[in-house]
Length: 156
Length: 419
Ligand SMILES: Cc1ncc(COP(=O)(O)O)c(C=O)c1O
Image (cartoon, rainbow over all chains, first blue to last red; front, top):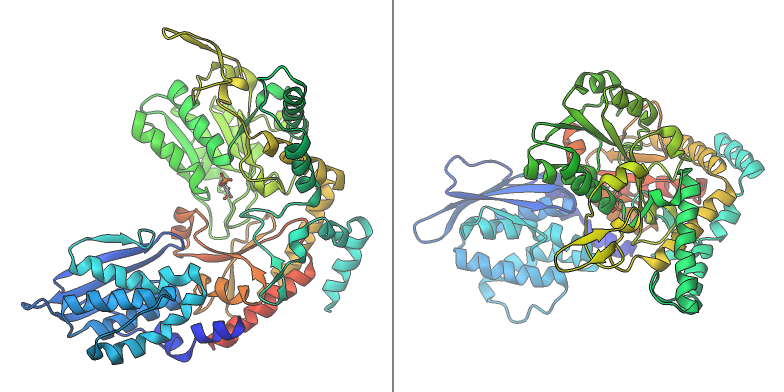
């Protein structure tokens, strides 16, 4: 158990949690969505700037949450910038499976680096109560790019 | 062992044997993640003594049938048990008669019953209900539903930064439109003990009724509803070392009998035709359908258990432990206790610099320590302190200084991880 804790709270996550990347409100965002975790009261707003070819030109977030949800939002925004919306959808699918400890299966080669980065968050699979923390940002960006405005991590 | 710890241990051994209390609670010998369980979440729900478990087991094995129905021995036995449980609760609260005791599903159901049945009968658009800033959602949302249905107004008594209920502000809110004051006896987040007797007195001065959410209060001090003189007092069984699935609404009998039923069904009727149905008096009027039969027996056994040990002795033990825990926690660098009211029940909410309560909860669980992390169903209160969440250690009759020491060690481990 203590090994699991150390794996969950590894350096990378603590660093992203303390110094989140893309923690800002871009003026030129084209859409945004709020994500709530009603269990713990955590709230995130994810902003995206979607370009003409359905690609993410910018992604950022604001809000408060635990180390896991903030680190996840931080890493996510880093990863999705420059990607197509369809690619973000695909990555979310893969990441969700990783967090729940499910078999990920064959993944496209172009995601290799991203998946490797996201692996550090897969430690949550040992903590079912915390999976929602890791996936909140992804649910929220999903809502932002697909035109919903609020998601609750309860609805998954 | 620190000096204060030794004094505490010696003191409590004289009139309160926490080790023998602990031996009654099977869950306390669990090992969690390789550590002895330090259960510090009794404010959410308490563990159950073997007396309650055995009694419920017996009620299911050899005393079980539906109540108030069959003309056979077992049904009579089950009915007697259920009604005797009502008497036990009545005596525990010093109610005038067991008819004033309504069994509900939990305290939430009890408050909703009052909001619906009393609220829609006695309140009109423009009337005001006063609650405090420290209420659990269970004592906020039912009134909002009522507000949205009939147009009453809800006023909120503010608190100071330490979590004290502001009596002068309460007095200012009281007015000719005030019809009901609904407040908690003890804050489930801050531990604040509210001056409920004074609140009742002030409310009665202007002719308003009072409901007390007693579910955090009754576990730490004995309650005499006649002396308190509120109109309604409600609590939940599972926080009082009883089973889940049962709560209690006490109300003044005359008032209860003026209130219409909340739910319709079997057991609550006098006579039913398709044209007209007449209802029984309280408590049957409010107990539609098959009640929590064995849960009532379990709750009565839990009440017998705490009274046999002595509520005062329990409170004394808990209050010493609260002092010990508060002092120990205060020594942790970067830890801030939320809620430092003048009169406190053994509930300690805290935050740790740079660490979210959720992370605290997960990490100390790996050391066998169970606390609640979150908004504690009191979001308006969290907003008051500009916090999304806190960690909360709530103490019960079976906690000891080892539990606190284990918590402190675990919190130091959290700090080590986050350093
Ligand atoms: C002050 C207070 N009121 C109401 C409740 C709700 O209790 P229950 O869920 O048993 O209805 C709680 C417990 O969570 C509480 O602490």
